[in-house]
Image 1 (cartoon, helix red, strand yellow):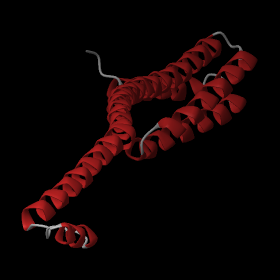
Image 2 (cartoon, one colour):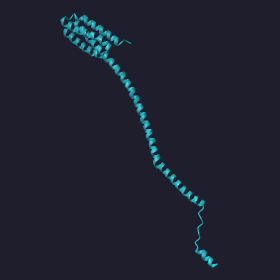
Image 3 (cartoon, one colour):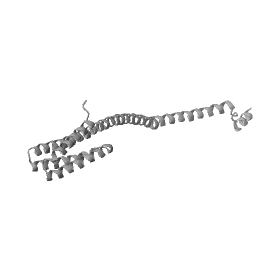
Length: 192
């Protein structure tokens, strides 16, 4: 028996063959370790890369919305100011036109008074000033009114010429010019 025991001890004991259950158990462990590493890596990427960038993007979108709102508000203000500007410009143009009419009328009435006072120099000076005001007025009138006004300007030039010849003969021309300008003023600026 001793010999057998020696033989038994000389022969290496063979390992039992790996069972499929043990192989799957080892593979499952490595699969779980790999899956865990993947999940940890995904979470690490999410919290270190994706989430901060998403927060920056959200902040940038909020800033962009605020900027767009500011732009829209300022665009509305610009539109309002442009409308007010156009309205004020129209009023200014109308007032300037009316001022030119009144300056021309003032010059013609002053010239008429100077003619009645036999003041040739005063009448001539006032008629020249009225002619200058009418030139300015002509530039501000619309096309449809310029034709009529050109005749008034020619009449003023004729009155200036008549004034040199005979002071009293210019009075009817001055009266007609005054009436024409009053009528033009009434047409341009009707009483409310």
